[in-house]
Image (tube, rainbow over all chains, first blue to last red; front, side, top):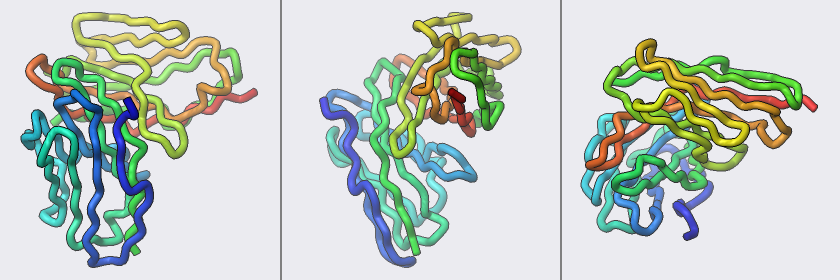
Length: 113
Length: 115
């Protein structure tokens, strides 16, 4: 398996623009997680899905952030409008239903200028 | 919610020596404690994990110990090698058989192996 695939790897956008990050989990995994990593706050859980259903979105910082999982093989994290403080590395991870080991993607480095 | 504290933030050891990283957690319901290694430009990768019904687990040069009473767990790396240089994260979650749960991470330890 190719592992968790995220796109794009790098994104530079202007403040106020909409940004969409994409994730393809490992085939057969039932849980999907979105994390954000910054120097100041470390790795933070934003939201996670079990069987395509959002379970806990308490880590989503503001209404500007939204996430969807329309099917078992695809998820998006959208920021609209983006702000400079959203600059971070965003990771997607997936795990099997009964195994809590999470496999991380390579991340998307987002820069909002 | 869960809070995980990790120390030290930076650790420098001579090649061949041992390294120890310590974490504490706050939620007594947490029962799954993984350790991740992150290399520059990559996502975190699991290196070892332990569940609450076990006090110690070892995998070659890496071992993890858990003290549920004190709510702390530690990572031990013996005979360190240059390729061990990376950032290490501890984490905790209330992992359940009915579905995976999100991880709460410590702030990370930058491990530097001096040749």
